[in-house]
Image 1 (tube, rainbow, N blue to C red):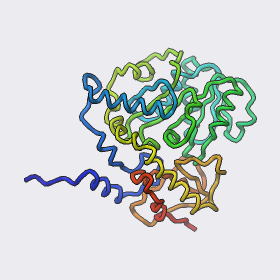
Image 2: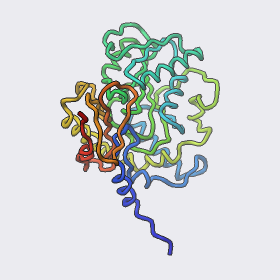
Image 3: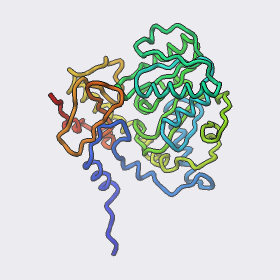
Length: 330
């Protein structure tokens, strides 16, 4: 007789016990990720069509947007497509670190295409001083490179003051932070705070863009019209996850609270700017445990950024015990 495979739960338990993630995503492996997988195709597959419709409806409900496009690729690709299709006129980019600086390059690409007249970059510490008028404000809601959250009320107030629309990189905030509906356009991926497998990216919005983008893959309508293979299995991985998302996300908040308590003397940002996903501490964090996978952020010159997705599979049963693997180096 053929050898029997372990159950899905046993496989998940074994894989998660062999590796402890302190990185920015994807999260630890969920049983639901595998339970949602199935053979699927984008045309003529009624089962998959129901899966995709259910997932996209749940994502629209989560963010509060009327329309959504899905595509294969990273959040970076979704942000580039969103920038080229939506941005026009005078654009203000809030510089909060490495990922926000990537948004600058996308806005400048839209400028080269003729949609954008000017791109202004202002440091996030100077938000309150901005008084000029713009057509678009672009920002990272959660900037993982420095473990920073820009409060949504400040971003929306800035956009209102500037008489601008708001485009957000929601990669590290979706599923974890509130009030994404305050942004006119957001882009994000299937992993991180959604707890899906990697490979899908999403652009959520209310009104179709006015820009005409010459080309195939970078044109938003190509994805809205599903004119190529979509992220079928990444979307399927979310099918069983999203109904349990409220419970699963509790693991992140439990670990965040435990992190702030344990390393409180090293915290670098006030509570108002602390994201759920990660924490920047002014200390060098290491681990003697070979199972630990530490995050190497691109945006800091000192300290460490620790991310809180490593016990996502435990949901509200998490106790932050994964943090016992960490230590501060002298």
